[in-house]
Image 1 (cartoon, rainbow, N blue to C red):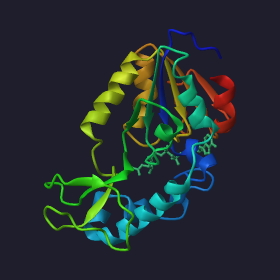
Image 2 (cartoon, protein in one colour):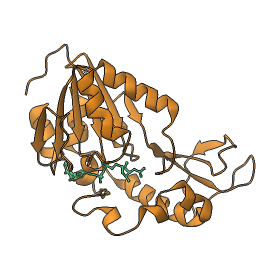
Image 3 (tube, protein in one colour):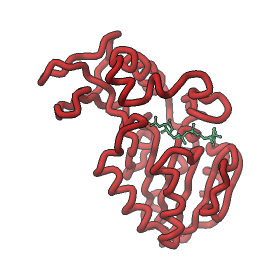
Length: 232
Ligand code: OAD
């Protein structure tokens, strides 16, 4: 596939792009949710019930991410900048690997592990994530436990990120979804939005979409870290 210099390319990435960096996906082969129940770990209700348990689980993920390195797929996306008119990365991942690979426009629609916020939604306290202990640190403003600034299942996306993502979908000429099962909304609807905007839509994933997604014009099955350096 050749991308013209005038291409405005938007990527949507998911956990599959970071598998080659040693970070487990949620679904599919080796998926975390095959073993543990997301209701227990990744919902606002679980956070309210037991913030310490959620803290410890997210801290384990943060430790893995701390030592992980971007792989050939993250680098291929970063290296596309300058060769086409624009590159925007919308990611569901919280690992920060796109920015570390050198991508300059990254929209983290599910938040990130690099900051903490208060578990009390009415409190606006946010701090950089710190080297963390077994117990969640306390909010300097109100004393409640802090949490990683991730979007959990029953929570809304950050409005600024969601708006930026929508703009990037409307403006693109080429849309690639990479390493995502395409079952979590609103990202599951992004291929459709890009198609409606007139973009060419391509899925790069280990497995075909299930159920099939008619809004992908092309599906390339395989490992993102092998395919993206070849096709971009
Ligand atoms: P999933 O774990 O649902 O899907 C990862 C996809 O990547 C699967 O379809 C795999 O087949 C594929 N895959 C695995 N290794 C790959 C590789 N090397 N190259 C290409 N594809 C590969 O991850 P997401 O779609 O990102 O949300 O999941 C979406 C959201 O569900 C996550 O952000 C998280 C999760 O629960 C929340 O926690 C709110």
